[in-house]
Figure 1 (tube, helix red, strand yellow):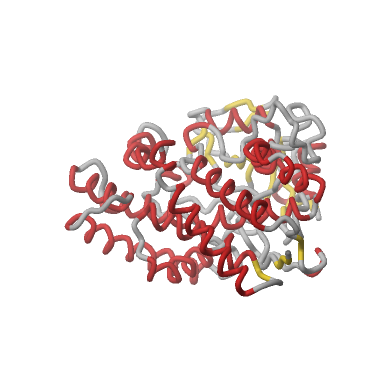
Figure 2 (cartoon, rainbow, N blue to C red):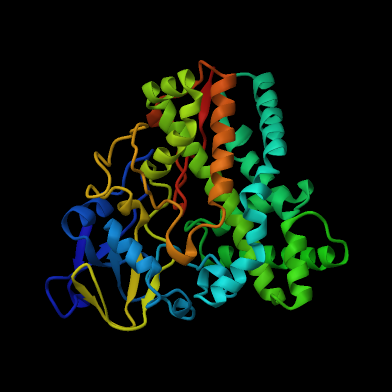
Amino acid sequence: MVTTAASEASDSDQYPVRFWAVDDLRGLDFDPFMAERLREEPIARVKLPHGEGHAWLVTRYEDVKFVTSDPRFSRQAVLGRPITRLAPHFIPLDEAVGFADPPEHTRLRKAVARSFTPASLERLRPRAERVAGELLDAMEREGPPADLMAHLNGPLPLAVISDLMGVPEADLPRMAHWTEVLLSAGHGREASDRAKADMAAYFVEMLARKGAEPGPDLASELAAAVAKGDLSTEEAVAIALLIQASAAHAVRNNSSNMVYALLTHPHHLERLRRDPGLLPQAIEELLRYIPHRSAVGLGRIAMEDVEVGGVLIRAGEVVHSSYLTANRDPSVFDHPDEIDFDREHNPHLSFGHGPHFCLGSMLARLESEIILSSLIARFPDLRLAEPVEKIRWQRSALIRGPEHLPVAW
């Protein structure tokens, strides 16, 4: 639903402020508010459910790339400002790389970049494939119907990122709980802030242990960076928290969205069964097509007057960029609302753009490939065990995904 807040209208009636309620959506439905903005008002003023004031919403592909890469738009300037946003709280700690601008952002990112090289991530593949096989063995023994969220899409990403980070298996339930509370708008600010504080305290202790007894994991690298003076303890903890929480939760939901997309588009699933070599290209198309988050993420502040797509954005104004609408921009993608595994030109922005391009993009691709290839190879008759209208979807979620995904085979 689109309403106009006349009292908050800009100086020009051309840009009224529209309240964006961000309703819960079912399945892979694309947010109608976002679709309307892209189609009719590609640079608009919006007010989200939390925070103060209003912001510009940028939706076109080229405009999104411009805002997310131009240094005149600052993430750091968001700190301390209650800008309009979806969640009642900010997800990262103040010292996190997500709030940093270059050159500070470059310094923070460099401290963990070695763990996310192709060679480093490929070393995770054998164990991830083994864990996926064990999880599916247990699911097969239990028999259908089975909930993939409980058996595979939930536990595998959590196990993989925890293995990379060095989190012991016994602590995975706590990590899952903290992450679920932190990455939801539905628990309230107090619960989310408490989860963030508890998770931060956990990593403070963990980094102290890893400093004394290092291992082959990311937490040990962060502890070493602290010891060398490359990072402060607060910065290292903020990096660990952001990577652990976002990697587990985002891949959990987006990989399950991919499974759902295939099970509800059986001709596409059948193509992958016949031609497994198509899977990497199919994953790129699913990344583009799936609306993997609700609304928009962390905004930016214009540090000076900047013209974007013919609209003058004044210094100090808030700007939100939508990667989801950029991925549906018809000037870049032919038939953008359709899944097309033969799409040859697919420069999607699902992992962001510019300095804040997702460091874990290759890890997410690897996990998605393992999940989909394992399911397709083992269960040639995999199908939904309930009608689509009975599948429950997470409510008040920042990263969209099913609450359960019942399947049979």
